[in-house]
Picture (cartoon, helix red, strand yellow):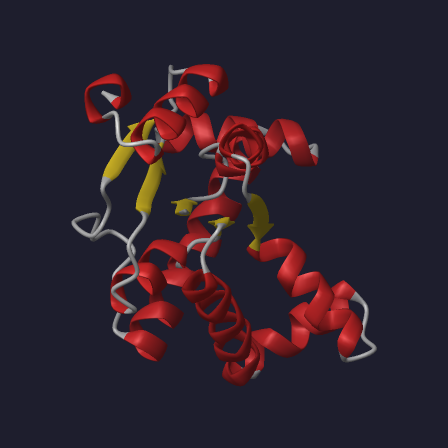
Length: 180
């Protein structure tokens, strides 16, 4: 079984990924953990590695290849911004999920988590999203706003994590009616 879970910062992917993977009895792999492992392999702190990645596109590309390879192996829920795209481009059978959320609610969540006020979190999210969108377009020709490749698009603005997990699990098990 393969499930990919993607969304913008603050959308709730991290909140629902682990319980969804556990309910499905598959491994959970998040892109952030993979990035941290890659930094450790290079003998760099996370901050040092992130700074290097900002100017060295081969780091993002190598990480994305690792995630694409793990997606190809299956029996995993992969949580990353581009996971659905790697499954789509690799023509891998599985469920591709995007979690959407209102921009202000995402900023509220990120700000609450990181100790920033709403205005700062909103600005940070916008900057990060613009940077990622430009990099993904440049590196891969992927437009993050194109949700047509996803089997299931959920909105976490007012839908709680338990219901999102239930919908993902139902869809992964093939019960499309229960997923809606």
